[in-house]
Length: 460
Image (cartoon, rainbow, N blue to C red):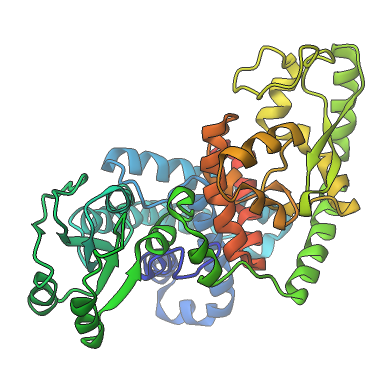
């Protein structure tokens, strides 16, 4: 499971992943044992361990790439079973390739297919039980929201939409009725109810989600709760933890000044640069046949150059020329720069293909090698649009404190779009990335990008 950190995945989801791996492994072990018997089974234990671990790894990797570890949405039993069958079917093909190159780890046909059906059954049942737990919000952390306005509504919606958030709202504290209250939990106007809730309902966390704090913070009650061992958290930071993005419109300068993060050490920068060079060099070599074929098709399809160089804003606001395979007609901007659209009629036939599977972005790896870009970072934007967006969107210039990237946190989580509203929503993810930037985070984004490119799942 990529980027296993409690900050991004609740502990129970990590246990779910590990538990599912153990069940797959044990299903194979049970079949082996029933077929070989006690004496023979233990005489081939080392070889069995290797074979079973390979099957477990491949099957769980396929479950991940088929989005079956996205537990924020609960599918129906039939839908889940169908997707598991698809994932394991692809896993069988992948194992066939592995067995071709490493025949020593081949499992006999009878044991393999018996194990396959046992794995399908046990994984389906395991997921059925876990999804029932998620639906009933069992084994969750109980929280109280102080506030009933927009910020509280954003947090409530995030918890409701993310079934595996690990949180359950027990009550609101505020003068008005909450804007979002999907489970009709009680709302109290009296701040003293905080202490009563803390005693009677074993509240584990209190979230300060006030739109306007001046004169509205129940300081005395919060201090009392703090001394009882209850964690008090800021609403904006809690929302960030839930969603992987920063609420740009609700962040004030003091939050940025005093919050943790927004700092990358020299060693981390050096390692990030080494990863950029290694990944881009490997990518250019592996993609060379595709690049040569694409260059030929682009040249034959429409008149104009193969490559498209365009000015973009990079780190510290420096302007550089990004390289891409040309996917539009050569006269696409004869009337001036405009936002790109999802179904842009300026895009050529082959351009639609290379955009869909990101072949058009292969030449950007040259920009990475030159040092203009990183492999992972905020998407670089054009100077003319940057000048407009910096005037309209708060903190937009913070995107330029790191190198732009071919892929990134926002590109992975936010669907393709090109408008001022999209720029604001992407900035929420970009600021989260800049605030929490680590090498593990970069590797997770690269891992996720592979899934998006190969299976066309997720955002672009």
